Length: 107
Length: 121
Image 1: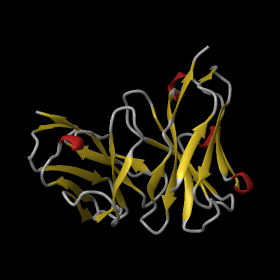
Image 2 (image 1 turned 30 degrees about the vertical axis):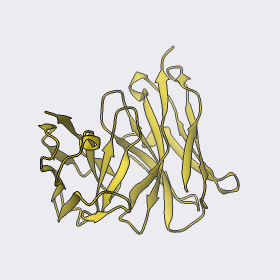
Image 3 (image 1 turned 180 degrees about the horizontal axis):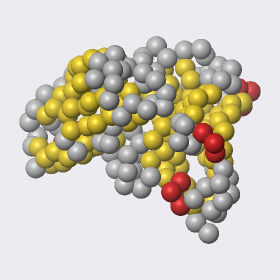
Image 4 (image 1 turned 90 degrees about the horizontal axis):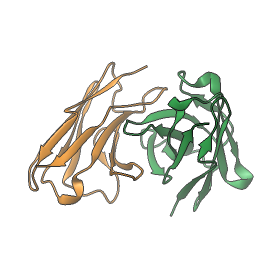
């Protein structure tokens, strides 16, 4: 199985801050890397596919980058609605695997 | 607008079989561009992919669950289903159904709202 490791596991930030979440794969997943946002009691919401392609309707303050084993999700200017847990997921090979999540909290 | 809705019992006894159905509306379940998956999330924990199925019936399972999982599809009813046998308390989780988009790196682009399943006697 491909292991996905996110860092940090939790992060405190303020509205307007720029934040970056890192995801590392245990082997290359090329660009088969997706990002999701989950708020408490809700289903995950799909944000980014193919490492850097933004899903339609996702604000442009979100961006993804990387290839191979190292990936990042950046939020350029945090908004109140962005405080949530973020997951990366590799879809290169089955079993598809998720990172453990990064909880983004208000400072 | 595509919608997915999970249904099934919220309480299952240990050693019994968990059975859930996902009903797809707003689009065809038979498109070759998409396939359909189940994901679960134990309380307070992360996401785990259980398995996925194409409309043709070809399926892929997580090896950690493979011996206990069956996913099937009924295109006439636009539904796909999950059966997980011999459940224990560790199978307590919110279960989500979702759509994989083959042309967007197999991402899970639409999700159901999730259904909470508790394994307890």
